[in-house]
Amino acid sequence: SQATFLAGSTFGFAFIQRTIVQIDTAVMAIAAEGVGDTVSTVVGATTNAMCVFAPHATFSTRYQFQAYCSTAGQVRIRLFNFQGTTFGSGESSNRGTLYVFG
Image 1: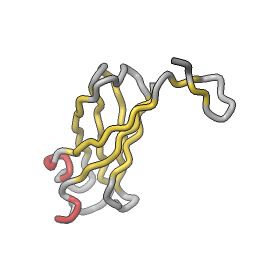
Image 2: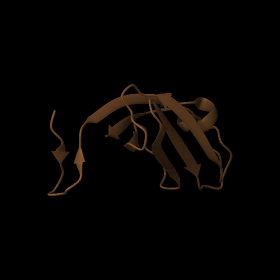
Image 3: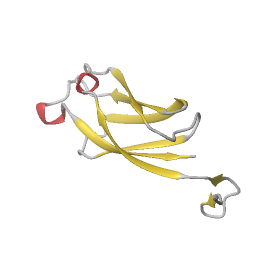
Image 4: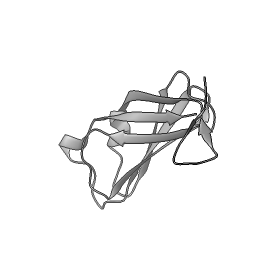
């Protein structure tokens, strides 16, 4: 295969992988102003691959998701709750699309 270069960059990606992942309910139930992590097994994810998580539900801008791969085959998704309250019942479970660039 051949590396894919984006927008004239000199940095190439050998692959782009898209996977649907489920965020653990316990992580979604973190307290106000808390942080929670969930780990998903993603075949083909490489150490230090660039990861992007896009939740399927709409969230307030007071919540942030960060995805990263520090161990091959595993992607950690971290949720930051910057709001002064916990999630509502409609936000207690979530899926999203995870993009892994390697």
